[in-house]
Image 1 (cartoon, one colour):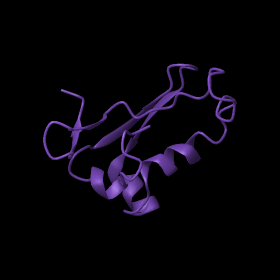
Image 2 (tube, rainbow, N blue to C red):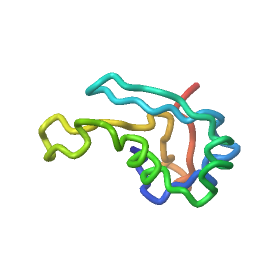
Image 3 (cartoon, rainbow, N blue to C red):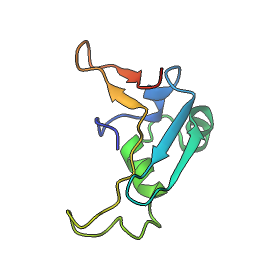
Image 4 (cartoon, rainbow, N blue to C red):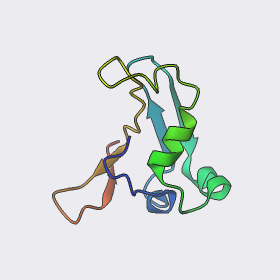
Length: 92
């Protein structure tokens, strides 16, 4: 998941065109156009909440911590702690 639980779709507009989701534990992955998510879900949708809803059918999601629970993450989301904490893309 993103490093900042308050990050919203509005925060991604103009910074990312595509939001990738990957789970290293089960190999599931996909990508979603940020502009389409913005229109469908609204600017205030938090990325953490969206990811939680997206992984609702993951058989590993509700396992106890440490038991190979769901590892879904958005690898392109990086919070730039060196400057003002703004969002930057990890993709070059």
